[in-house]
Length: 180
Image (cartoon, rainbow, N blue to C red):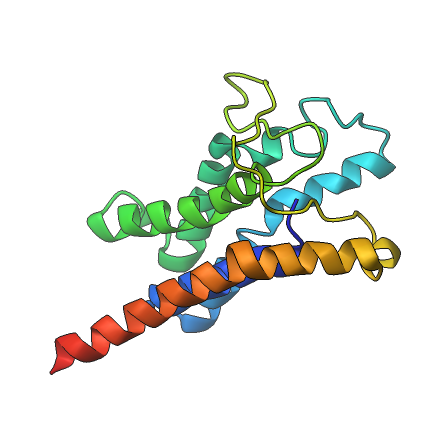
């Protein structure tokens, strides 16, 4: 899995690109939290839930279905229940779904673990993408501050941070050009 820092960065880039006229604080906080939430499943290790279990790490909480559930809650928080099934609501649903789903998608691009249950609960198979350039992050703070942690950060800078920064710069440049 990429680090929690990189998942949060993904949300920050999303919020920077898709600014909203609703409460900016709520929008920004949810944009950062949504791509991080799936990793809360590491609590399962402490509860004795096996890694490969449906509820284990990289199981259901990393799926596209869970991402949709998170998107529904985030959308309700941002614009209220009454507005979820409006054009604006569907835009927020899609936005928060993509941000939350980015977690499992990025994890499927890593080089370790059992894979990601992207299609759970419909299919509990764990998947990796054919291209896995991101070094898998160690779990635990002490392991992160090591040669392994540094290798992970270098791969994330190259494969996630730099491309997202380029996307943001292009989007900001287009906004400036379109205003002229």
